[in-house]
Image (cartoon, rainbow, N blue to C red):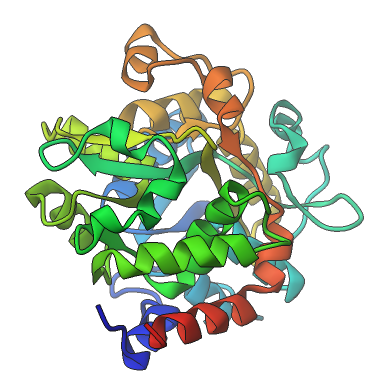
Length: 352
């Protein structure tokens, strides 16, 4: 398989998005506008977080679905139109370093005390720049009509030549943060020492049938059996399983899976700051996170959240046992070096 430089660059750039509020969306007095990714994420935030919060407090929360909330925050720097938004932890770190986020004390968001501090998005002086509502994990999704889950009990399997032309792979922007990180750990290194991980990534790339440009495409590839397996997100497999696609399974290899925390942040200079802090504190609490788990398979970050028998059966374990199988890297370091890492992966793929 040959990767063109155009493919790699397109993957590194990612999605584009409009720079203003969608038509018909206007902030109103006493209303919170929350920027969310679309599809299932938007639905989860509406049903598990926004509607219950409005019912409990009387404060209206409107979920606005966008391709990339971070792009909106950057475009509106100095004149924010949204009160809060969701992003990956790496996106949050980058915006925090660019001094684009409002920060809060622990007294303003006390429910953060029930979330392990390693999941906090915080400044050097300890102020909270983002709330972690939940996390997913990055394992190996397997179509069991095409392969066995036993075939992928180690991450090294993705570089096995037996899978030539039978694997899927994501874009370089995500390879740099997710795939390379867990493959480096598998090779005996970590996010600081990625030489062995790059070798495994190169081996996987040689086995790849297609570099997918979207999550929808990845879902289709797995569901139709176009690929036997690919590194993928636990919540996406959860959604497939809930839709009746029970032959796609998510595997946590023996080296573990990569823990993917998400962050909710407020733009610097946000209006109605006290109202926003109350909303963020609610997001950090256990109850909405439990509802989010039931709706979409996102693992609660709050230590007080409890898994129902049904959730435990679907996960095959409880929350604490699951967390013990997940690797939490230094996302700050990964974010700081992301540009150079993407360039290195771009070059490696172009040479195949």
